[in-house]
Image (tube, rainbow, N blue to C red; front, top):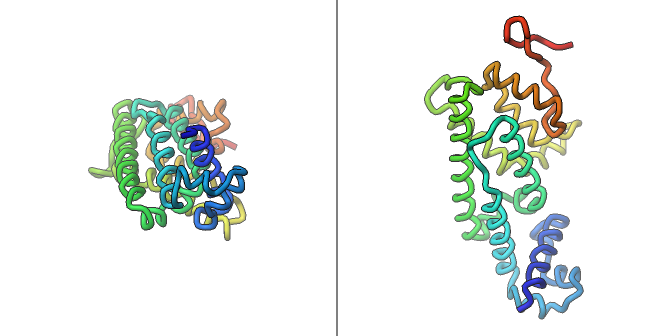
Length: 225
């Protein structure tokens, strides 16, 4: 068995799925793109179903190797958002059909439950850590940051589908990174906001700079011009 050819089939499938949409790509399309016979392809993946399971296995292995940590700073959280963004772009076809594919593949449904649980745990632990470090405010009610974690993971998982819809009527394209930070920023303490402001000076991957800046006299924030 040619492992390199198997991987090429998977990678080419991902490219075509992203370009045309999963439902519109046939095994013939993939074999033609690779300039191999259909028989060579079906040696590895007899049906499109088998191919999709192979792609999802590759994706899940890659996800596990990302090794996200709850022990991060504001900058570290942003880096994790960026890594997730690149992951969504690589598997655009999957995230743009996040609610549809599990209906077709029980294996994907099971995988999604594990991944969503992972991210729920990750974000709740990150926010707990931020509170302990004085970066985030105390909860206004018990479970508030669990709710915030659900919102953040929902944007990360379902956001690609929503952005596609928003593009149909919003004059200015939205980006998921900006939406994510819009959820978190109101919960930061003055110290947390100051940390965010400092990294926006050097990190161009963050959303636009805030309309507020540290008030050096009182330690608060004042409007900038």
